[in-house]
Length: 330
Image 1 (cartoon, rainbow, N blue to C red):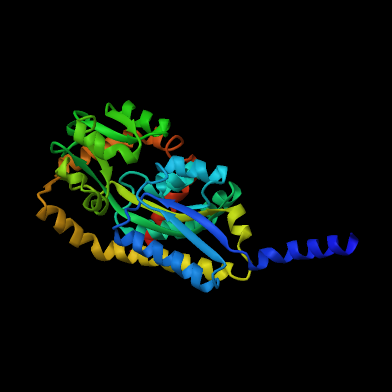
Image 2 (cartoon, rainbow, N blue to C red; image 1 turned 120 degrees about the vertical axis):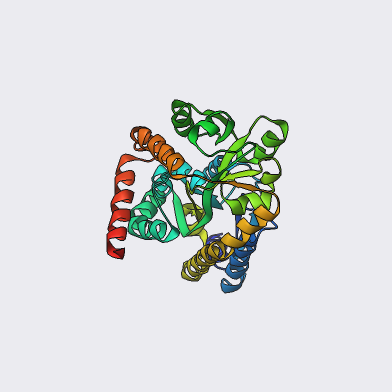
């Protein structure tokens, strides 16, 4: 029996070398979007450069649930990866919200300069929680979309505001500011708008154009609230099952996809805004007085944003790195 047992052990040790690793990856990205096509290309590249040893099965369009659901499924092992917005990434570590502090950044260059400075710490925090970050991108600049025009904070307070379910701390910040914030999964936003349960929400024009939310909320406030940070992560257990010799090529393909997503977002921003206006979306101007009211509102909530929405250390570091970038540009 001993020779047979030794042969069986040898065979078992060799099987992983030729076995295929299948990664199930979820995202809210719609299947018909240019963003998902870029992500799908990444998966195809993984299969090619690994010689078929790595296969990615994608679940786009929220088929695996909202982002908190997706992160929970990754922790349970039923999913191995995801393309997440800051909402989902914050389920892993809330420090990522430092790149989404309301009204803190003027342009994408500021955001990415701050991200680059903070990236080692952010990625270390994500890795410490059992995930491997593969790339960073964004979903465009968040603006307010609403059933009725919103120029100043009081206009928004009079409408039913969507707030992502599962984040009670952010919900409390909105409510403390006098807003009628209603928690719901992102996958139910369309239904909420159609039934009148919701009147307003914050997301980017690019997301609205793809999802057609503007058909129920045809007003867009001309105010850049913040950027939708995004990134691709896989579980550490899944990453470790991938043969070590192909991991560098997979990481490069993921980073290339992140760069393409960023470029696509910048290239299509004005085109998408024009398309929304052509579809009947009315841009609500924000004059100097209204802008001051928004700034005052955010400043009044800073004590809660710092510490509750964003961990204090990450909040301070983001503003310090942003200011350092601004000084270099002068």
